[in-house]
Figure 1 (cartoon, rainbow, N blue to C red):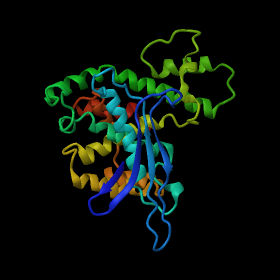
Figure 2: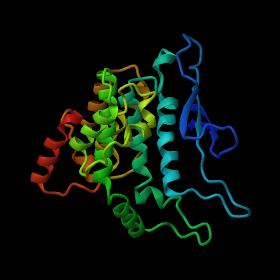
Figure 3: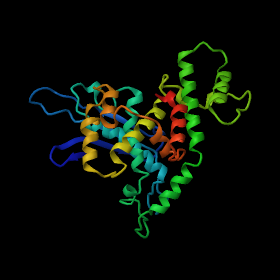
Figure 4: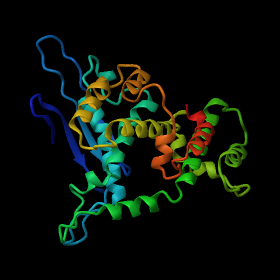
Length: 299
């Protein structure tokens, strides 16, 4: 399908491969088929082409195809990557879209996850297939409370895995990685790890990230700041969307990420927005101060 602007015409193309089949890649990802690039004077910009590859639940018999909220969140996440690819306009193709630092390119995808949790967005399309009733604010509020019940432990787990990834790739001489993982577990987690259990063997992302797994948590913090600055008041604001495009997405990986981020949220970033979104930060300034100090290593 095409991504089209009302005055600029076609901006790029998206292929959708959303359902599982034998032999298919079994996760979810955005793959760049062709990067955008400047082709020189008098020649149209090379339009980017991407594919969103997912493995959503297929229809059963005559039942309609429905996405769970988790699947919809995955779709929005990958679409954030797609927007980064399709809306960037760079001179060189290897700086187009998601061709940038790993701790930068996950920001748009995590930003787009915020939209799938906002009732003002969900109510536009999340309707009962049988009655047409839109999902209510109360239902979303309850769902958010339930989903954030163990968010503190989830953040601790992400910190633990990030720390282990960094340890593995910066101090590769250890002969007992189970012990290294156990020591980090004791440092960052709130529960006591079982002894002599090689938990690290369950961490599939340790291969392929090369000390970059922290980028997910890092990107979530920055995405929350951007959401707060641009979309919290109105998630469908055209002005905010245009600003995200013109000040951030359009540059792909061709500008210093810090320059692009601060152009949207300023210099004074913290983890307050992220911890608030996670449901583990109240409105007390002392609480906020304590959490900023506790999580300062993210910056």
